[in-house]
Image (cartoon, rainbow, N blue to C red):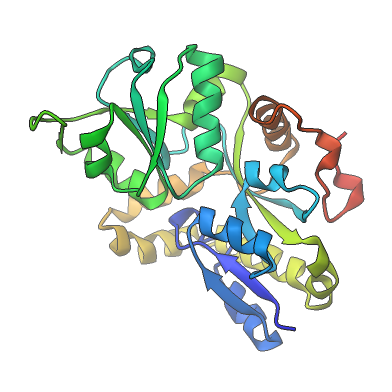
Length: 285
């Protein structure tokens, strides 16, 4: 049976994917591309066997997955690619207003909902929409946008059409920074998870070792990654490089502490012991 790995064409995943395909394709591994929500669904359905998936999704379906320790996409403070674009300068003014949510992410949506409850004390109306900032901002008071789109839009900070046919520049709030202000902890957006039924094949193919080696090579060559990816986004290479350098990729103890704090707030019935890590010694206590 073919082993399939899901990958995301975002700048923040490039260090993991640096030479992963070159390492694993000769072993018969196939690769499937998609946005985070697509990979979430594909992994749960058994269409792929391993992927970087939304952290909250991994917890919601903990009985289906095993998490590879030492790998994540996390930030301590501003992440630059999980942003709330807001027509109002104060988030508290969004109480009772409509917020358009990206259809690309589960964790970022859950984070915004936690922040609204625990940091701002507001109850907006949430509507999931196709991730297209201009259209979202015409139909809502604010819009949650993630990934490369968020990085580009925050750099450009362009005028956008309002619902009343005027134009303006929205205020931008970075949810990584907002989480840090609430908790003082890092935030983990994604983890690498495999289907439990695929673990034997994952180990037989040497996938954990290949992923670790690819990430190590990528982190040692961030300048090349940034320079190669920047034209895709029409951004300066320096902007891409700074973004990559500010991220955290290793699911450290503090990243894990931030993740557990978030999951307890986002999922009322969450039990830390429900998360199974590939190495039992690294299971959270």
